[in-house]
Length: 326
Image 1 (cartoon, rainbow, N blue to C red):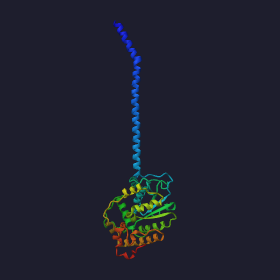
Image 2: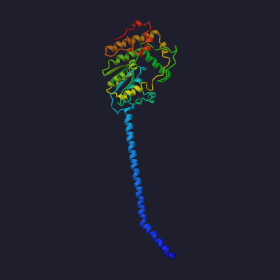
Image 3: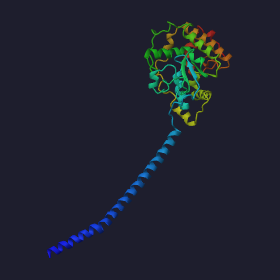
Image 4: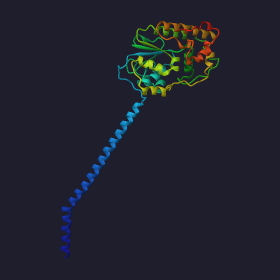
């Protein structure tokens, strides 16, 4: 009897294994497959939604994107961005990059400028990957450039800015000025003022398209002057890029304000008169060649000339020589 029960039990177990178990396995498999399909569908849907969200975010970001990039090699002709040191060349580069989205280059490979965000600084200036190339004074680039932009700042203020840079070893710090920091040594028409005049005289004779930008005008009407530069280099500035300029006008290299009047005391009256004489000659050359005169010599100078006017133009010892140029 017991043996019969055992045999029957074995038969039942065998029937479950060979008949019922496969069905169970199939059912279980179907359940897993349905679950897997459901998870795959969810994953695909989630991935698609994420992609759509990223695309929308990218589209939204790109409409207000102020990123800057290098162009492909040989994209841009060699365009000099020339000035005397301390005349706002670095600031102008920043504005050009914000307005166009393309990096500017340099002949000098200044690591501090590179680390501060001007990533075209170490590019080969002949590669055509940067929109303009910074240089100073009468540059060898003049013989090979295809176009040129000249930034002019009155030589008193540019000398002060350059002295600040040398005294602080920084593009942003202001030196502590006192009367011991006089400009007597080396300030004559054979040095700074001579460089100032030579640069302008050489520039106006270049046989390539050229544009003169006055630093004081750019301080007064920044967007207007940036537009002039953008059009000159055959670029456009979208409304979004205008906002980039407006929201980041100063950039990373705006010098901190120090004692704004003390530096002018470092110039003797004779130095100021010499500077005015040079400026007057330069302004007449510019007008003769069809460019605007120096704004600080006008009857109603822009506000960027206020300190210069107060410290230099009001100097009674040379005011008689300071006739306006129109």
